[in-house]
Image (cartoon, rainbow, N blue to C red; front, side, top):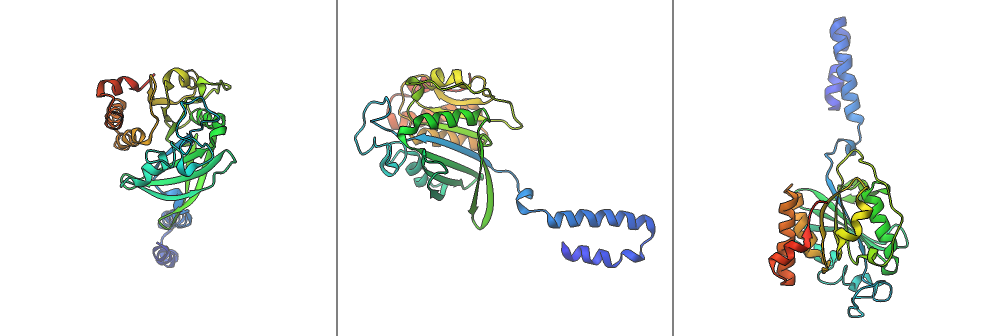
Length: 281
């Protein structure tokens, strides 16, 4: 493009006034295009932000699990993170998701932050593992993000290019995976706004529609998937839902995908899984 601008500028003095004016406008456009940072010309990719409070026998009202799985400070072995069906391990083992990086979180409550990239279509998944004793922070951050009251951006390098990902309240889809702590305590309500983009959310926790619903009703977000009863909040359900979401399927089709996956792993019967996982208000 620089060569084209140079050639046009050499011929500028030989043009009549009217053509000079048109060429001047064209040269100004080329100059702006050349100077524009690559990031501003990129097509926006979709971003999923997942909030995972680690299972914690000592600090959460859960049915106790083996100590190795229920240590809220041990992300590597935790039921909801490093175990086979935990978010980090399950997505790391998935063919369609590529692990880009895992680093300590940006705040003390977040023990680890992992970033995955989907192969096709392009999508980034940012997953935060919260210290199990800080589950209140995980719930509060999730609800504030759905309401667009908590916003962040994440800089990283992926496949040789520098990217700035919109996360938290700027993400396209926000997900909570873990114990339904709103059965144990309450937090201040957050009034959300509509914002400039559609915000959807998933809550994989026991009876999440009943307990998270009152907090999210005025958030401005849209419920894509949540639950009506007790569940195992493991990553295969989320993976199945994202498979449909990335294909722009309807909420009902996504619900059916999630229910099918839940039944495949839990052997609870498809009708029971369909009653458990619901969409919309």
